[in-house]
Image (cartoon, rainbow, N blue to C red):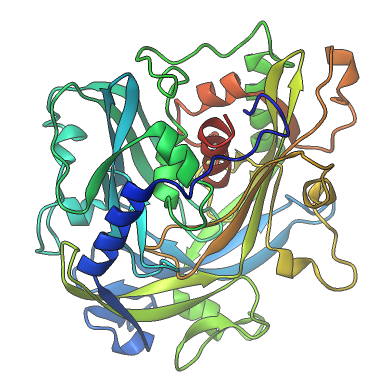
Length: 464
């Protein structure tokens, strides 16, 4: 967290060596992504019995249907129920970040990787970003490099973080990735398309729109505190003596939300969602979407990419409307805290997770009777000099097409003493959590959702 709310962002325009390298990668790894009807994607088909969109191998992922019922957000009224398409990907993916200390600074090995849904083609991915189908060779392409540092045949290295973390609960059903950070003392060469970058450089590059991809931001959130400071070692403690709430109280706040709210999930044949006369979802010639254009559409693409493990492939992508993820931060007696909200999402594995202060689709806030999220106006109209981070970032381009989310961090005035914080006047499900406590939660899965994790990375690396 910045020492001053008026601290200027890093000057990211002066890293000429990196810019030359990235331009060279763009020239060398050219690619083509073309829209295609879902029923003409090679290797994909709609099942006759369910209508689900599946791959001929039976692996990778499928697009199925989901019925969700929850009382979250109903203000004590009857639970609401709806159906929607959803991505079902049973296998756990692997996100691995390899670290090495060089000249007193910790560096991470990152890849300039093309994903078909990226708004700008290449973005910086972790050392390894692969589904199980990919790194086990189901695609019959080139092997995924560096996997030996993160799997059972791991080479020499110290594991700094290792947990199963969730992905977007509105678009996936029970999706998780293994997030692994390993520190090595080996002299590991950077293969073509890879580059060692210091954490200081990565923090500066986070200020550029659509450059550090979602998977990198998500896995970097799990770094223990000592690593960004250049010192290896165990994760920092939960900060019991300095935090506004005890760690037990923070855990209790999330457990209470999981206890209070109902979330019933029923996976349905996609055909039932699309043929239900009361459902707004319909299949068209080009894809699957709603008649009002809200939430997302499902479309098909064919891809040619020379730098990937497979040079040609086809797949469906989910194309959501633009989103906003905002985080309020404040120091209490000098200790940085973040305002998190326990929230329920349709495809969540364990009912609720802590998300950022605000998580919404701004285009859905227009119209009569629409209730604006709590603290949205505070984030959008902050006092002068209080914006710590403001950048438009991409969601994961391997499943989502041009999924754009504004990431915003705003600092509130510092307070001296617990009594000055309006802890008792917070709306339901909100909780002030110290940054060390949030890091402690990230040692385990399903506590912070992916939007909160990405904002924690920005707070830790880009606002120092």
